Image 1: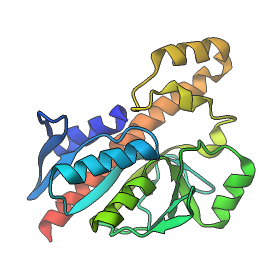
Image 2: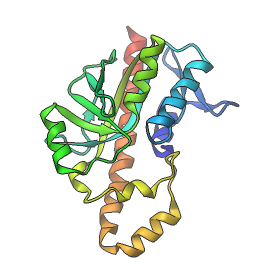
Image 3: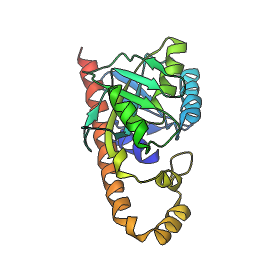
Image 4: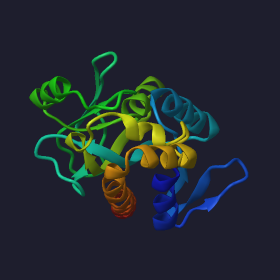
Amino acid sequence: MPSELAPVVKAMGLTRGDDGMFVGRVGTVEVVALRTGMGLALATAATTRMLDHTEVEHVVVVGIAGGLGSTRVGELVCPEVVIDRATDTEYVPAPLAAAAGKISSSDDFVVDADLVAALLREGVRAVDMETSAVAAICAARGCAWSAVRVISDLVTDHPDAAVLGLANPDGSPNTRAALQFMARNPQRIPQLMRLGRDAARAAKAAAAEATRQLYALART
């Protein structure tokens, strides 16, 4: 989302190129960054565009995720395994830092209690909507990849998937939908405000960690 890309651009000191991507250096590491949008299809298209655009040694997925079980808001998750829930395919990253736990990726917004319980039994710590798609393209292209996610909210915070409709497919805010939702559900306004604050903090933390990992890579 724009709110996830902006902290990356700032933390890494990137500048916007003519092609809409952002470029720069973190130490001695050359970086090119772009936004995927929300969901597996857009993440697939963005990763394909990235790898078609330039020679890339390592792809890092940076952003926020939903937490499960004992995982808490603000916690860093660098997964050792990412699962595509549509196919049950498992992808193993080449992490730039210590990795632990699993992330499950899907186009679905996880709120079903039975699904949450099943994911917990599998050792899943977080859910998102893009990482497995990025992993699949990287695996097909023989490109190393990893993920840096910070928990912005818990799946148990949401009684339904309504918040998903408050953003456009590209991840930008859908202001009209948000205003309509708040007018119909004023009791959920405090939750939305908290979610916004926590998501902003999580996105900033994810960008900072990804930057730290790249600086560490540059020193090796």
